[in-house]
Image (cartoon, rainbow, N blue to C red; front, side, top):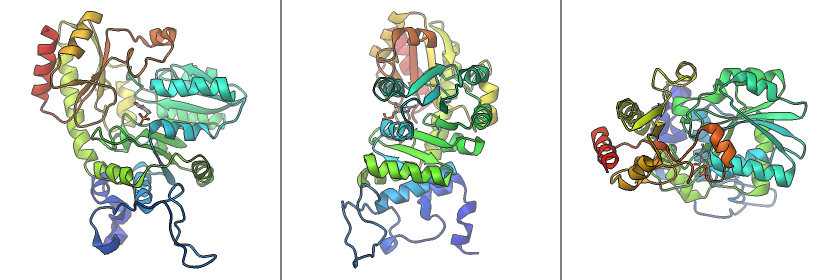
Length: 389
Ligand SMILES: Cc1ncc(COP(=O)(O)O)c(C=O)c1O
């Protein structure tokens, strides 16, 4: 059996390490890593002939290699690599027309909420924000004009879990597209397309890139027709990821399973430690048995991930933590090798209307941690000294 014959059976980690040529194909000159094709345009051999590449907004060999790898990892028919996660979410939203209605998880990334509010004002697409951890609420929100469900699980930043199989059932019953933002989990831990989703979106800036150094976004689709429509919109609106950034994400992906295993282990350790601290009121982590979504998450994902949130005694304690940690940076974003602490009310969810933030339980005492790959004892020591002030 040749290496090429074995291509489709390869383990996730092997695919990540070798890229989409893991089956045994060779890159130009036998290059082990994806060459960066830093070109805007391509010469044609003759009239009516093409190398398959004409203009980098539409297609580029480096980006192509990344898109094929993401498709292999997510089990997608096609993937479009975008300049960042919001460009990817915007591309998906370009599928919808004035009057269309979308039912959406209410505690999603604040930037997505900001975009959806803008689309309501300017394009007449309507959204209902519901707690999608309760499938009955999603079902009840479906209207005659509903075209899609947009779901994030675990949700950001409350870590609520939505049952993707239940969402797929509702979507199928009402002929809706099921769109899942899989940023928090990555395909290493959760594969929504296998559970019945039609589209997966990612902020590739996070775990996929993994080093807090590159912005990227992905739209992975299952169905061929849907993929063609998305590619048409992509060529038309131009959210393409640059060749160099495509290379950086490919490089990051090589170590995705290694990083995420370590990050997840750190999250488990920190979650357990936080539950024992007198200054912590509540820990939100789907890896804790007491988490209301733990069983659903275990049934649809390979692990609880590397994100956790926690509520502290009061706003003053939260301020002390973010200002006094030395190793852990007070910063937006997530998924990188360095642990970050975030105050969602002032950062990721600052533009979410206060009454909606209140519904989600987000106050000045609510903090989010994105676990990195550091030694867990160093992280615990840092939080402990910061809490003592
Ligand atoms: C879950 C989720 N989706 C989408 C985005 C947007 O991604 P980007 O910042 O790459 O535009 C983010 C950003 O934090 C996110 O957390």
